[in-house]
Amino acid sequence: MDLTKLFIALFIFQALFPFHMSIQAAPADSNSNLFREYIGAEFNNVRFTDVPINSNVEFHFILSFAIDYNTSGSTSPTNGQFNVFWDSDNLSPSQVSSFKSRHSNVKVALSLGGDSVGDGYAYFDPSSVDSWVSNAVSSLTDIIQEYNLEGIDIDYEHFHADPDTFAECIGQLITTLKKNGVISFASIAPFDDDDVQSHYKALWKSYGHLIDYVNFQFYAYDKGTTVSQFLKYFNTQSSNYNGGQVLVSFISDGSGGLTPENGFFTACNRLKSQNKLHGIFVWSADDSMGNDFRYEKQSQALLAISH
Image 1 (spheres, rainbow, N blue to C red):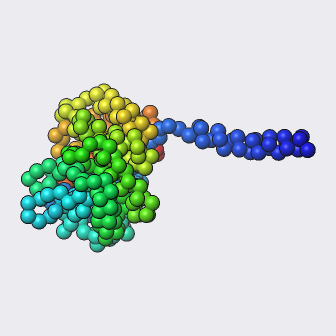
Image 2 (cartoon, rainbow, N blue to C red):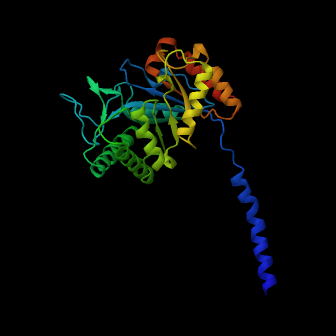
Image 3 (tube, rainbow, N blue to C red):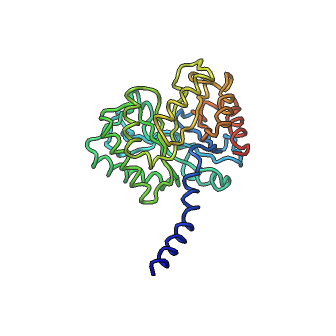
């Protein structure tokens, strides 16, 4: 009887062992064909149809922005009651659905917060965790379903709350929207500022397992960033958001960071050779209209090459 039990145990172990090894052998880093672009913040009449789409990439538009501020009179915070602040005349629910029906590789998300609203900063300013989360879940579910969206991006850059409160509000929001099947992905958009990083690193520490992409704003570094500096910054932020899919980025107007003219794609190819190119995102389609989306085309061509 004992020998039979031993034989069964060995058989089960042998059957499970290759599976265990396959999990352990999964690479820590891998390239992706993900391209993401913010759109709609500058009200210059840009439309989805203006932007070139390469069918061999996964393409995410990110509507900018939904903000929990009121839309009439003097702007003031609304404790998680979100309103649409993007160019909804040109980026409407019907235009989202129509464009996605023609491009099966396109998904659309919305971004929360941003830098400013009206004539001032857009602050993260909750009255309490529970009330903010309840309001945010309700108002964002309505917007996401109206616009037929798949995800959210978190881009608060100014705070009237401590990092732990931010982490709980945003973490619980993402948890609930995913649990309810309202969204299928979530991203965050930090940059290299002590106050910003303290809030996003607190969120990452508690809820990083629910965050699919890190849209790190590498263009917030100084204009004139070199390839070697950019790669150093990438490694630093990959460490800060350990285990995350950190995307590289540039700004269309060339006002900061490593620009396409000065080596951005050289850096991308270097990361790709190391299996660390998790995707590219751009701020923004609004500005890229002026150069006929030249670098969006180049970015997608690079990502579309077998990854």
